[in-house]
Length: 221
Image (tube, rainbow, N blue to C red):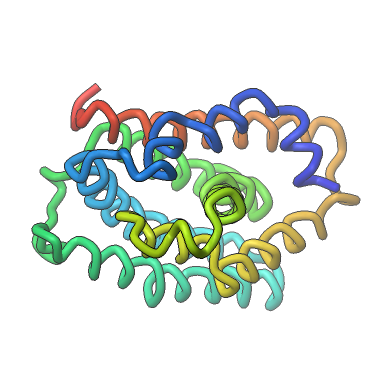
């Protein structure tokens, strides 16, 4: 299957993304609030661009099935994840007042890279570029929940975030994403897989950089 091949080919960077120090500290509840809020602010801005990436995915669609998939996931981000972040950001940041001046260089690099993949490639290229975020967060959420359990989360400072990505709705969405990506497995020759693997490697590195810049509180590089 295509997804499993991508993971196997990029196992080291994938593991570094899933088990980054930011994720470990978030799980332990030891992550400082200022780091979490920095991350949330950047992720809110990121999700605005990520939703646009699904619009690009829709533009690259060749079938009604592909178009429905792109539009469904774009709507899920706009109506679901963005609203979650908006509610958490009420802790001290007005999400609607965030502007281009608030966007980090890591954020710019990641989101514009994904858009460029879609603008210069095909539907499957773009789908692969979107996969690290879509599926990765589900894996991270599920792993944290399995290790901590419901009881340990009762007074956890990041309970809402963890339960969002470990929850049944998000887990169902990422299963659908993985299955959809795998439906292209038989259409991918070695040359195409090499290109997809390079795209995947780049976006996983950018996901890792996103965690790191939240630990460093760095808007610039």
